[in-house]
Every structure is written in structure tokens, then in C-alpha cells.
Length: 199
Ligand code: GLN
Image 1: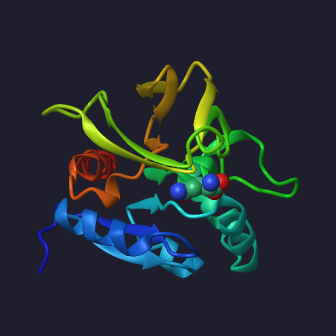
Image 2 (image 1 turned 60 degrees about the vertical axis):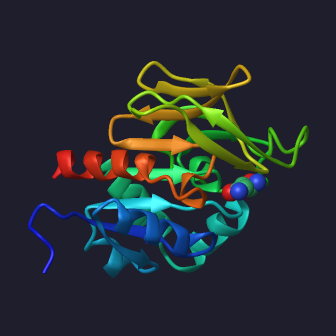
Image 3 (image 1 turned 180 degrees about the horizontal axis):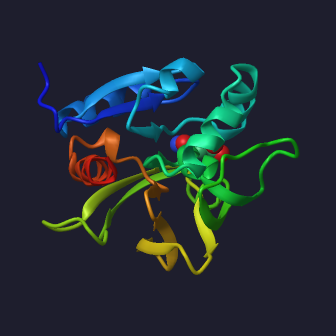
């Protein structure tokens, strides 16, 4: 059995690279499970929102009756970590979204969809991230968003080429890039620590 200190962390499994996050969370000593329904949402201590396609994720969140339950738990302080499309889902405001695209909000920031994508569809870069020791993380950017601006409560924790690519506000963390694809679990370990601290 898992020790009491082991948090249960869900991965929003409507669409996107769910499996990679489940593996990274397990490697970072969390009990990881996919979450699709409100009942499953009630059973977790923290949530990862994967990369994928934020317009599809937003649509499926409505179809599965998850949009309001997710918003409520984020508002109530559940720790959440979003990568790429997940970052878009956590933005209070987005640019270049679809007209009917919904987000959960949680971070006072404006995120531009596909911002790097227009210049460069996909690339990797070493990213220095506050709170992560042991050198830069390998940032995998895939049609990635960047953060145009953050409000006073949000903290920029990483930049690339002068653009903000990671932000934290309280218990909510978001990165433009995909640490779940690298085999380096330090960012997931940081998030698991955030979940532990919040319990
Ligand atoms: N461009 C995608 C979107 O707008 C995000 C890409 C990704 O998650 N790798 O949702």
C-alpha cells in the first residue's frame, strides 16, 4: 500500500498526452490516475492538465459535464499543473483562441495560443526554471503558447527567448513546454511537492 504521504494526482483524460503524465507522476512518487468524470475529480488531491488541443479539450469538458466542477475545484485551491494546452486551460484570458473556447482560469495571465508555432512548429531548448535545482530542464515545445502578460499575483518562473513560458500562482503551475516527454521528472516532482504541501 502507498504510504499516507503519497498524494493522489489525477490527469485530466479528455484528450491529450495523458499516459506520459501518469508515468511521470508515478516516477515522482504520486498515485496517478486518469480523471474524466466529476466523481473521479472528487477523489484527487491535485490535477495535471496535459498537452493536446485546447479547443478540443474545452469542448469535451463541456460535453462531459466537467467544466464547472473543474472551475470549482480550481477556485477552491486544488493544486493544478497544466502543460501546453493545459497552460491555455489555466489562463484567465487567451488570445488567438476559438470564439467559443472556454478556459478554467486559475492564473491571472494572458496566454497566446500557437505563439511559438507561427515561427517554429516544434523545437527543444534548455530552460532554467525557478524552483528546479540541478540545471536547466529540456523544454519540448510543440505548437506551444507563450504568456503575453501576468497579473500581480502570478510569478514568472521561466522564460525562453524573452517570452514567459512558465508561471505559478499559488497552487497553480503552468508551462508552455512538455516535461512529461523528456524522462526528467523534476517538474513533476515539484508539482507533487506542491500537492503534498497543500494537503
Ligand atoms: N496548440 C495547442 C493548443 O492550442 C497546444 C499544443 C500542445 O499542447 N502541444 O491547444
